[in-house]
Image (cartoon, rainbow over all chains, first blue to last red; front, side):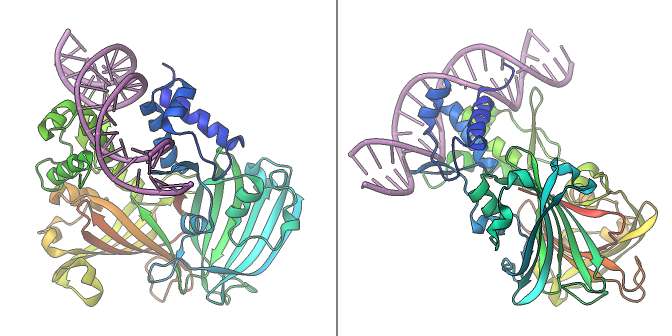
Length: 227
Length: 227
DNA sequence: CAGTGGTCTAGACCACTCA
DNA sequence: GAGTGGTCTAGACCACTGG
């Protein structure tokens, strides 16, 4: 047995989702039907579905069924945006300015594996104060017509999925403290800023976004839980 | 059925571990024996053990058995210490200075739910340069004789478990960028520092440590993965 | 009410570890 | 070779959802 049966079911279902056969929000077959279709028992199909749920690919609801996970504004805000107020509630960013340009990929964009990229630059505020400065780079061929969609959704990952079928599954971030320079849009020179570098991967595992963010953390904090 | 059977098995086993009946590294009964003991089938005992493994409480090894997880230096360094070199490898801290005092709990120590606390202050270096300044507060009654154990282990959580049977299961952190002040032990005044506030919980869920850390991130970064 | 996922059982065989 | 966890099956009943 090269791969466990439940793993084969897992891979097949995942391929249907990433391949577009099953779109976000679509209902999957029930455990018995899926098992029959794949030539395995209900219990084996069930194990595959449970693993898919754990990976965040599907959502299971007793009495209703199993559905392909949809990236909602809430989910994007909760999972992939970590700034919190002192009381622990998520900070809500509001757009202040935004630009999207198309350009050739530079050396630093190499990991995106694309000749051309879109570069999004935006500044967002929290409770009325400019607090976030972001530069976002994505492969141009994966997001056709992106510049025509301005103003972009505040939650970019909802747009990625809704308009381009690209679901962000994982993001690796590296955080550093830096100092604001002359002309910084967020804070006066010398002020401390939290700099975050992100590499975001789609369900397929492909790197689809690189992001440099700077946060003014005078009134908020970046929250993480380690387990 | 108020609670699923597998959940009852889970709780019973967890209670045995937190209660000291099963110590770190101890081997659990196999799935059939555990099931028989609890009056459930092997499959149900198995499900409880899998959940315990997912929670990081036990480790299962095919052909060997199921064992209570031990906090090793590696685990502590990998899970609960997030500073990484640019190439992604963990930064290795080396002790420079350390002090442990006993004092009355102050208002800010309230969450620790203890009248007296130990406060550990230490400075550690990375690749020879002072890079971490930490203030750690724990309830005194949970860690009797802690000041006599100086110099403390570099990996405190290994000491917590080995000497006091307290295993850290979860840590909530909040990160901010701050500026070094006059006399800062890590960097010259005005330099940016990454400030991390941690609240660490034991397996039982009790808050057992509060920690304020400052990192010089000039040569390292704090790495996180969001999923 | 029919259909779904959630729990549980009893049993089988396989893969790995270690003496 | 004995003992362990890993996979898989077939079937049962329960709990929840929605028409």
